[in-house]
Image (cartoon, rainbow, N blue to C red; front, side, top):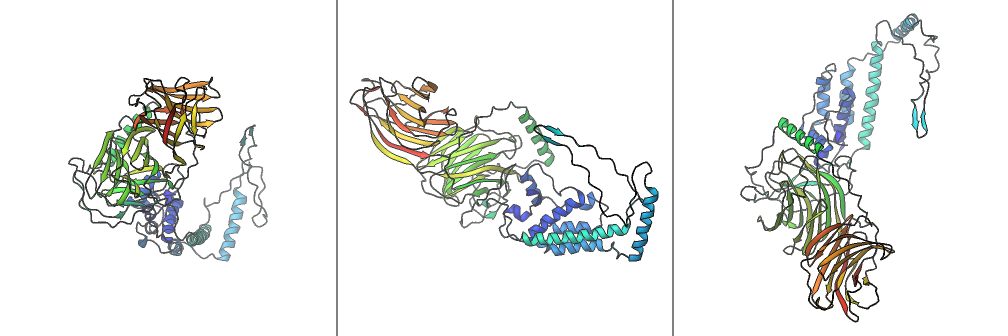
Length: 639
């Protein structure tokens, strides 16, 4: 756990040896002698930073009664550099033995017998007279006193009470303490036991402890200057601090592998980098932010999203991105590099907006260092899509997400992307933000979660934690197919089934108008999450409106979940309209002719099922013998 991690484990060093165990044993020894661990922190990430940054506590400040050499032993066992530590548990045990050895004397058998006799007489003389007990001579006692019964045990049917045990008489020696030779023997036994167990522990635990889920790397990429837009030109590669799970998160097992690009030297840090506040000021600001957050009205919890069986190609990973004053973008690379993918991660704010600025983002389709696509979100609400090429920024899209962003201390933001060929779909906290134009870069490439894109968006020593960094593949399970939905006056909805069983998905199709709207009305759409007679219908009508209908068994039992107007519908004969539906968890998002329309709640039906292209949802929206054409009907599963 972070409490016992050595600095090299925090850094993510893969070449570990027994000296990391020596560090952990030093922590344990400090804890055994003082009752407290050397470092105290409120989060695992801060605990790990203390192991790296804070000096080893002086144990004599806590236990001044200990021999002075204890300071040296603890300092050596917990040295920041492993070369400065004991080389083995045996050496550590020997050092402890040397400290205690001078106070241990070889017991003299005759003297021991005399002291035992004296103790027996003292016990008999000083035993309390009010207690109804019989003194048992030490040399004839054959069994230990029975332990008191266990405490009451609670169960669903009530609690069981046990009688309170009768207090046993206290015996005190004349000198008011245990003879010194007993302390010597106990200390010797303790040293031998602890030393032996530590040696065994060191042998058994030799090698990689496997604490880290991924290998965090400070990628040598240019950091943008906020004021002038200048960028640090050169690059350099160095290892950065990686961390394991944030609060109560399970240790991930998948490793994140950095790319093997050749680094270049980095230039100096921009001079306008924000100066970190003093510890006292930082604590005060964060306290104020935490108070404000606690006073805010809680947001009602959404129903849990339905699950999907789409297997991830990377993750989920829980870790941290450390803030370093080094002019580098801090990155964690995935060990997958597809051109098309789905990404999801929960980014936890490193501090509140009162304390300082921060950012997070994704690097993807990276051909080499500083040759990549970047999507970045900043704490001030601004976001940008940047096709970075050869130290030059090429901003394709920019916007503001202030109304969707959670900027406060202790808050997090759900950051999600769907990347498919020329298009991307950017979501923040379950709200659709923008469709992304990726046509300038369609190649596959490395993918990295990152922070510190700008010079002022890091505070040295802080970290940006993240949870469930995951990538999924993008591949169709149906289509693209084309066909016709032939009209017939039979009061039946005309449909083309994909014969799939999907819960979360992207459905695409392009529909051809059967005739002009001046001749007759028409409609088209999708049905989805079909479970027998239960399903959703998304219908777009030529009148310029749309509806989401929840059919709950029959046409007589339908509920209109959402509805609205359309403003970009093509109405002419043989003109086409493209429809895209993203069903993801409790929410649906739909697009008409590549323009985002709205999102709607689909939490009432969480069944996986078939998906159908439809027409003639309304009985008077067809003409006998005509047909509504469809093309590129495609289904892509989502996680």
